[in-house]
Image: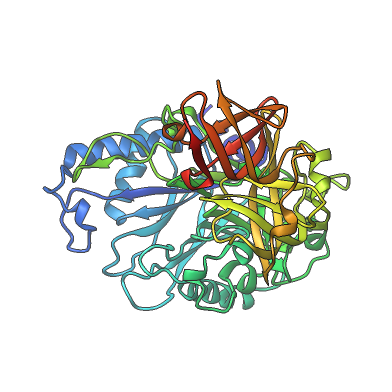
Length: 515
């Protein structure tokens, strides 16, 4: 019976699609001093000891077991010692991987690695440069039912600590150079923490832009053509050198695997060449890309449950500051969905268009859009003085009041009836505009307008003026005037919370004339 099982096991393993994933485990270090550790992980300091290593191993193994990927790329593994300890831990808890590979960059604090249930036929390392702080790329070839599939496991330079874009471009160029010498038929997957958003060409922080807007993902690995991300139909045409970023499989609001101070980002990637769509060998399973979101990977407040380091000590709690991402592949041919909306095509529409929708299925370009009013990271924009305005909620950083822009709107939302844009990218700045014509008289009472120079009496959360009564809301409750106060309002957003209301954002936006 045992011999029969040995024969049947490989057939059972290949009888269904297999899962490929990538996971930044956030600093999996051992308890032996090497001299290359980050200072927080020097054994005997900061509460980092054998007990803490055991807890970190258990937490990492828990995620990997529940993820249940057949091939898993790992980032931030210190060395082969802790990697082997992780393999043993996984085997002990019943979800072992028979095959593994790890880089061996001399002097590097952390390495990248690969776990596989399929035999690893070959492995090598691609050196980006000789600095120990610049991580090698792991290249591993696995054998899947006679099909040789190459995995490139990456961990590119982060955006912190002077992480300008040219440093990520170095990784991408080494990787692309290797890809260029592969045979055209060679099947491969690029995966790992690339420290770049899928739409990096639109969202690159200007402080990191030392390349005149050129980015590692879109310009070197060619995940975009012009300003448009490469689409599935282009992959089916079989062009060599371009790559499909699987983040496009998800609705815009779900495109994140990392969150830092509330800023969501898509740093972890699975990129595919055209021959993963050609119906030969191994192919991508359409629409299978997902983010692994087990409940325990989040805190009660909805933050990622990262490994806790507080007051200079490890707290023996948490997992990682990244979420794993995964996709399925099969030896059966790729099946295109011809009816699927191309989620990243861009159309040009007026602001009025948003009031007919509940959500966006593709980005919308707004041309000649003026910032009429801006407070903090919120703003109100209009295209013409008499046209509709719309509120930018929490996404107006970098915009200036009184300037005109071409904008790319990627997400909208309705909150208690108020129409809001929740994600926007600046495509082009177009100079200053006079705002006087954009402020509306009282007779135009519709949401997302800016009212100026109005006088009224404040009473019980309402403003009484010219025979009208309208609710008024002060964003900072400390600014709320006493009942019976006469107010001169310099600027107010005509917002909406179940009904029209005036919204006051700053103490400078009104004066108390009489109490």
